[in-house]
Length: 135
Image (cartoon, rainbow, N blue to C red):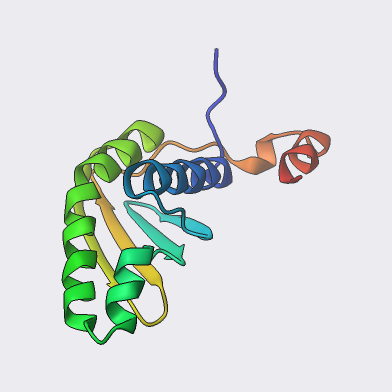
């Protein structure tokens, strides 16, 4: 029997899987992916999410085209992102709202979930085991 994961474990797993998804699908890995669960909402922030071609377009004075490429890439990866979130959290994704900033290299996504994911209270885990998970 597999223990129910804590909120932190789910957030870490999602962060790692999203980073891998971007690497596999776009050939570019964000330097940091942060996921935060808020009941039926999930906030995702990607640092350094802008791909080299988008950066090249922006740097050569074609920022509007870079923004369009960013929007098209977000739309193209959305079905896989939805499926990944559903697989990790075990709940349906009702809506994904996403936007990226070329100048800062950040992308933010809010996932509206069909239910609150089931999580284990970390206080129910023995302290020694919890400390080992933090490393």
